[in-house]
Image (cartoon, helix red, strand yellow):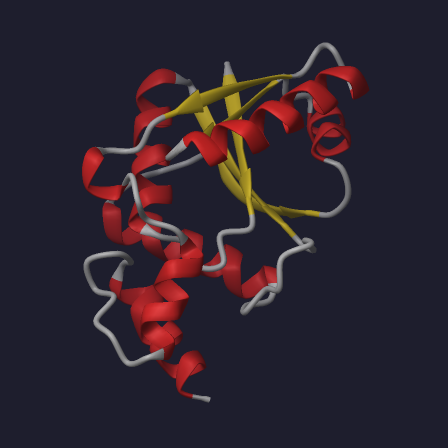
Length: 160
């Protein structure tokens, strides 16, 4: 069985890669699905975010089934691709509350699609793309949080 790991990945962090690594040990394949648009203010285009995910996975030595870009509802994407399981990472209670609401809504839209939730390693439990961008925007070192391919473009983008 294959699973889908959807997200904005703006940008991909070591926490995202940690979740993907764990998923590849559980599932026959993992497709990383980068959402094109979001309510969040995005720093990178969908194409850039997908490229950064691919680069991070390559640097980590992880192979996935695919890194794709989708637009619209997750359940529609999954239905069209023939997937039934998606993965999400949970870091804190606030993540749980949001993910619970999304899971229940997705279940209402398509009861055949279900979400599974993975905890990241303890060293990444607090990590978010938003915090990484904040640190980078203030000239801080983000090398512990992202892979080199992300660090270089993030430093360049945040310098603008």
